Image (cartoon, rainbow, N blue to C red; front, side, top):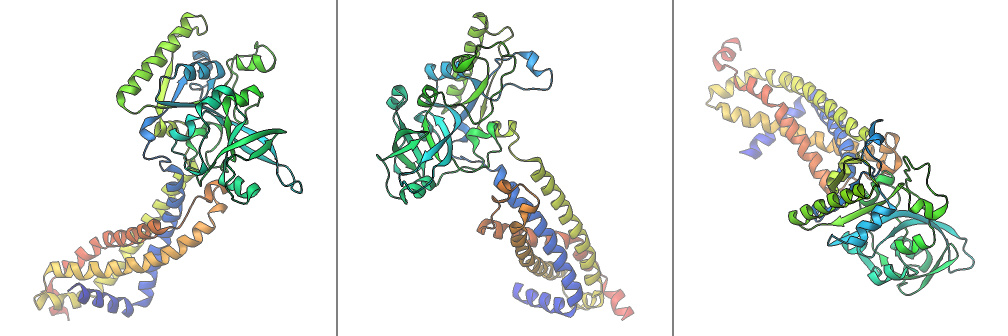
Length: 438
């Protein structure tokens, strides 16, 4: 029976090609606008580590006091070196790592190649297991390398391809800022979007890091951060590197892995006790204030999803709604022009349910056609999305299989929903009136 109604729908659409084209175009343009912006929104708002996001937390400690928030500020996004090292040495979490962004000049092995800049992170050995970092070759360095401040690094597969032609480079050396480092591992294709572990130093959608090194070694070499260095109320700090380390400047991120609710509660209590100890020691002159946010809460606090993506999605959905309203009008005109046909069918015994089925099937055919046009327009929209969004955001949008399926589903579902009122009107046609007037 469905095949019969499908054939009737195709015949009806062919009888009114102009009206059919208008409906298909309305659906196609509305769906394309909404799906193009949805592709960007989905890319920037997804969970970058869905299997562990509920176990990864960011601790914050108020080391500036309530006066720092009189101008609308919040708790410092990062920790001071003093607080970060105290929490690292206490090791109250299953895994933990302090992190800060660094940059170097790499001198290639090939003497004919020019030195070039590389960016990366100073971290601890547990960074890799904690964030489920996959490896192409080797592994991360060991905890003993943190303690020994070893000259060891982990490099990206892209950097490995660039300087070693993709070969297994574990055990080989590279030179950063004139110092030799041994390669412990090569990270496979791993670049979570957003880069959740460093969103407080950027948008989280920039280029993937090239190199990772022990934070203890970076501190020994007095390697300054490439990220934010917020120093509220530290005008009287001692000069030099040691003065900066022992100041209240917030520039180091800390992540901890807490596997269950009990571990979270224990760590929360530890943070409260630590802040209270700092108050009793005279360092904090205010009521202790701490916060512990899981990964998704942290992304929300940091406003990782750009406002323009949300606004664009809302506007596109509004445009789709306008297109559907126009489609309702076109369907209503199309169906009511066939009132005499409906009256004859009803007089011959067709039930209202059969009328509903016929006209909703016809609407679904329009939805499929509109969806196919929408797919084509969405493909063009994804290619040109950089005209609206920042390049680092725009390049995340992809027309993949899931988006294709979702586009067709939205198109058909939206058109069928829009057809309910015109179909209801068509099913309410009185056979007697139509037979008398015709």
